Image (cartoon, rainbow over all chains, first blue to last red; front, top):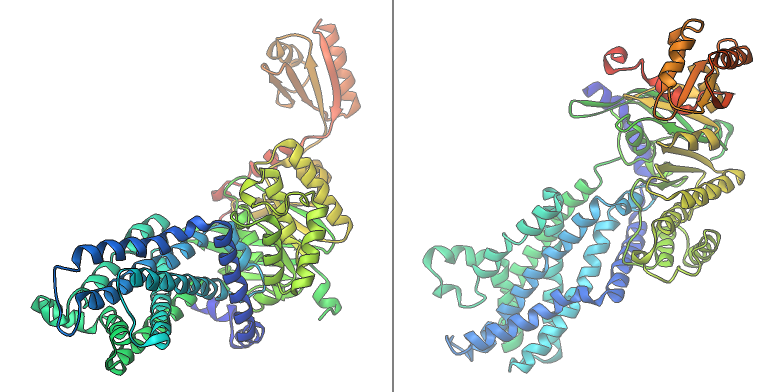
Length: 275
Length: 324
């Protein structure tokens, strides 16, 4: 068995395979082509945008109207504290769609066709993450618009708005990459559709999205403190209200790097598991 | 890149083995396809056809043995193999939500064509397969036959030297199947090598240059369809009786013709006799039936059908018989 494997892909064959593997230029080109495919599908089927774009409108509108007068936080109106938290929650709950789309595509004839083409295989994954980054971008603009109508103000001007959009896109995309890996692990479409949201519900709620960490139940506090949702919300608050942004931003950046790179590498390896 | 060694054989498979858990799907398959040929891989469900095709198309790794496509080893140089093959799988490799034209352009671009080239080729192929009018519509609205033709066109975007088709005509109505075959014939005339799997024996019989019969993970026969049929048995006399009573007729012939050479089918009023003596057997049969007063609607001497050949070839290869 072991012997058969060694004769199968000996060192020289591996070297040969490495040489012919599409390089980074091909990965970039093919990723853009795949992203273009998904965006074209969205253009032809705008109904698919209802979930990522209408959901934040509803959640922001409802949560903020219901909760706005129930609590108060030091240093300003609760609205300015709550809205960044709810924005990040929306980003978190949109991310599973990336993984679901890929696992739905994985067993189709189209996936076989892609695998039989001399293209970069990873591009199938990166292309989808890229097209979903565009969706996160549009979602962020919609959320900022709705938040404005609800009385939310970004006091740091255009730079603050740009920062808010960048956080939503980067954090959403990193979570999307994680979802791709999870979905490929689960493999079964229906199971993935039901199971993929579970880790994201505690992620979204055991955080400082609704209240400062200090007001949460004691045993939740350490979790909420390391939760990237807390730091993302803090960054958005700092961008909106002014205030020190460096510490939460570094914490968030580290999380984004970990969430994108580790599951990303694992997902690509899983995806490429044939020759 | 194109020295004589590399282009000698389109497919060269030696001792290919593949297991899924405890199931041995392929148990030492040898297969050779020469360039320009249309080779058919024939076999019942579960024989291993799709597994073999997926290994050749670099979608699966074999456990043992070697496979070369135009001289390129599928494990060592999968990308080199992918750049010379086109695959039409069992399930259409298309994005249903996109127009036919966008599907073709996307696949052409991913295969390495430039934007202009891909658009031009997509337009040409849509024209050639009668899809020009529908090219702007999403694939969701296509009929089964159109979808299959678009899938074939997609496989041809990169002008593959070897086209691999896994049960391409399954699920097509007879009219679409005829159209599809016309397209394949045209491709063969243009010099494309093809390997296709099929369960439609008459298709392999009519169109393939070589037929490889796969059963229980081994190739049990290879050759031209006519050779396979000849190997499976001699000609048969086919009698269509004017009325019911095929079994009785067979019984009355049983005195003078070996009963094992006789086969009666009551429902279709058909009597077949192994023609050990060629036309002599036909004449004898006709004379005997006339003497017994049995009305005959039609009588003919024919080659065994590929179905009969197939059954004759596969009947001796149960797993126990072929295990090593």
